[in-house]
Image 1 (tube, helix red, strand yellow):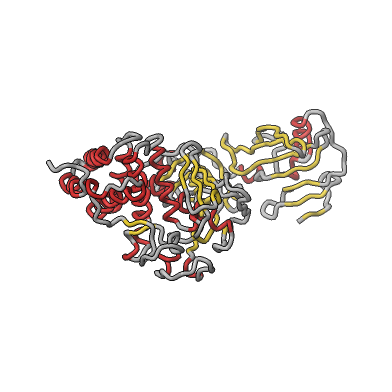
Image 2 (cartoon, helix red, strand yellow):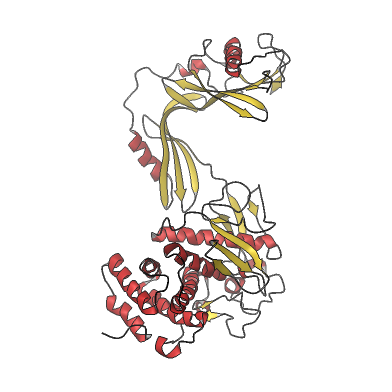
Length: 496
């Protein structure tokens, strides 16, 4: 609570700590305190009012850290120490105007008499390695990296504790954890995920699949049950849809939310932007879980409203995905989103993948496979071998509406059509058979891994041999005959 009670006759407003009773904040200073050296001015003022601030009169235990400049002036920073270790969060800041006038004090230090309670002779402590192990166990995530591990003094309910301070970065789900562990017994004194959370609603993958309804009218709003609420992972906190794996920066008039609420219906342009961010980010995390970490050096750039035509593409020159808005906007269909991301995956593995007719067809086939495989369990059984059920609803007369299938009985030697998307169905049919034979995880690891063994102009036969080699390297050649038989039946490999 602010007050005008005197602090050694100081004419200023003060705020006292409810926990400690010491002065926590000094502001609106009416006395003139000026000096050319901000550090010297701050030090002299703190010594003059040390007792009211709960500090040692000689400022022992308070270490000068820096003078930080800003448009507001200069901010002199001090860190409190006890027994040679930093008291976590115990900072003292003295604000000085650009012309050298003292403006105020923010005091986060623990009163020095409380720190005297730390025993000079400490009991046996747990090691930093033990503290890291405890911290890792306390966080549930697919990947955990300990970024900091430091011995500190940590205040708990106004009392100092010997502790380890750890900072852990996690993936799947994304998090940035600060954790304090008692250095004497391993008890977790504090744990907090400091990563800001954001929420959205999306189609997952489409309203056709979510409602199992093939008669939806794309010119009307869809029922609320078509949407699913999700947490947006990995955002950088700017309020824009920029994160670890995706950035919508190329999108014009893009959405910004500082409250983390990206809740839109499909009537809003921002909905497509959210769709692209969420589904590409989820696919990127899926790749990492499969073992393909580090494919992309930078977040995938996305332009959500790129073309008025009903067409989307991955631009390998700019390494950017561009979505069309003809018919049903392409970024409303998560399978279209992941199909285009499939091209980006191959380009990240083999630069300019697809520089021949057969290699291009392999790219289209893989994009369909990746989307269908990823969303397999979220679709009704009859829709699983089809892709783009929502995007195609405005023109497809099939039931369910779709643009392509992965379960056609096509043969390379008999059915080659010299059209990259049609011929991609030959390749996707092979991959779909492999998924049924091996299961999702193993099939995806083999198929995606095989791209590393291809060239930018590989043939179907080259791709088949790459799949066989990837299986050998990843799984010791199990099911080799069954895998080869898939490509033989499809006329891609000759029987041996």
